[in-house]
Image (cartoon, rainbow, N blue to C red; front, side, top):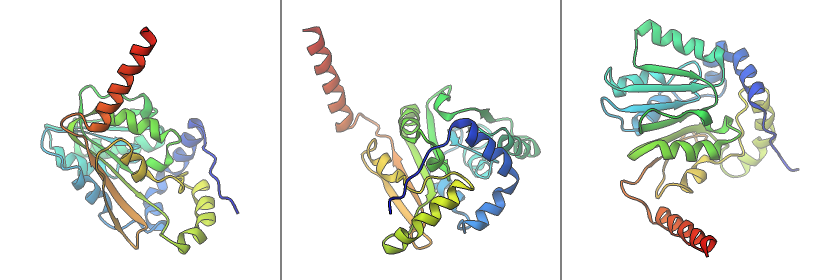
Length: 238
């Protein structure tokens, strides 16, 4: 049997998350999200005071307190989400703590442009929900400063036969709940743009954190791409 995933359009995703905005803590329990996994993902960003960080698909804001604590009142936290219902709950958290250095944006993260280079980018249980995840990844990687870090924290199927047996049920469950595509393997896509990817797993390999640091100087891969582009331009001129 071939298992496939059909991406939903932005309006469908927005409506779905508007409906489930009040049930996010319930989904954390339903999917056995390990305690403190979000905090561990934020720690892997290695943020400092006054840094700027983007929370991709920030939802109701469960990662925002950790991000704000990491960058402090002199730093900046950006959150982007397509669901107005989710963002309303995230804004309530910010208002309750009087955080004036947290900016929440309603819209597609593919359209987000940070006002200055970012020190960190976090995908917290969101990468697999993006139908245009590769394009988003590359755009946000470009917005990272040299030395900045990108972290993807998410769930995956267990390895081996168990994962193959669970795949049909996982596809059904995701389609009816959080729309997270279990066929996507973010660590491989991050490896396509980064020189090195660190990955840690927990709960029998069902959850992971992968992270990459943007090189301080252009990597060999970037230099080769630039050379290839220069050759193509020269050929066009000729």
